[in-house]
Length: 428
Ligand code: GUN
Ligand code: ZN
Image (cartoon, rainbow, N blue to C red; front, side, top):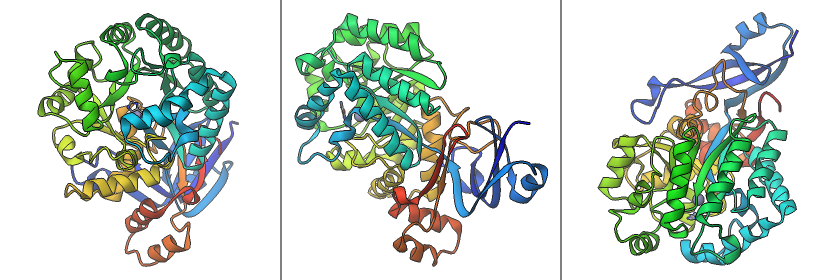
């Protein structure tokens, strides 16, 4: 008989998008729930008593009052920036030139790329993150290193070779043709292999020539099964720079659109300083925007207007943007998302924050049928949260009237100490 594991605890379930209606209609916590795992997948969920009785041979892990959630999904990160996270005193363009590009140059060394891939996956796993969509460097070997490290852990990840053929140091530049060729070879090697997913990855319009954007648009047209990730409208200086580089474009989004880099499987990081046409177009094509709140605060980019984009019907995910973001933790990122929305008069409920960090990000990555939800048939990628992980959080939780107050306190004040366990493909 195949091995079964039965996790018992409080279990978090989604039946839809809680951002767009009353969250009570789509989110619930079962206070005595269970999750049965078999062959890396969730085989059943339900009341603890019923699952225990029906699956007497299963190995039981009893988490008591801990919360069993979908594993966190970070929809936009730069794992190569792991070692230079929290670098002081710059804004986007000089932050890239001063800190980011020199660090990414080190990835010419494939051993270094492998070391950082391992370190990043260790750190994020400790923070409860089971899937991420990351920008590798321009070096194809950095993509190989990341997918290979994730495969050993049986981890569902998305990455792609970052493409840049101008406005970057010489040894971080490819060409339109080599970006096309290398990206094509990588996606043919990796996309759909095990749990690997490829994203065609132009860094952003300022570091690509129109010829390179064209080449990558053509590649995406040939491989529409892949995602496409980039950055859009993060800082005012950047937006002005794009206007100068692409004088014929209607707006920043149009610099992608004109080269075929728009569609339902597109992911645009940041999207803070958008024009009305851009918002309407993102909604119309079903593209996803990715909210990176700790990064937006840390690099001084501005406030993402979640309510405005939600009301326009734009899909969205949540992300650390490590290392422009100042944390590897999606708990910290949810807290920053709460704070950013407060600036616009929107008070996100803990249920909505948890959804953004799990099922919402999964939907943005078009993986919502596989990950992001605790439901039979889904991958057993789970994060177990201790809702009293520090004295400060425990004393607040002792005052709570319901479990959501506990969850909110852990979101606002929790870190990797709150992550009791991370399960990836059914393994702890
Ligand atoms: N825009 C282009 N590249 C980057 C990057 O690495 N981080 C952030 N935050 N924004 C970018
Ligand atoms: Zn980014």
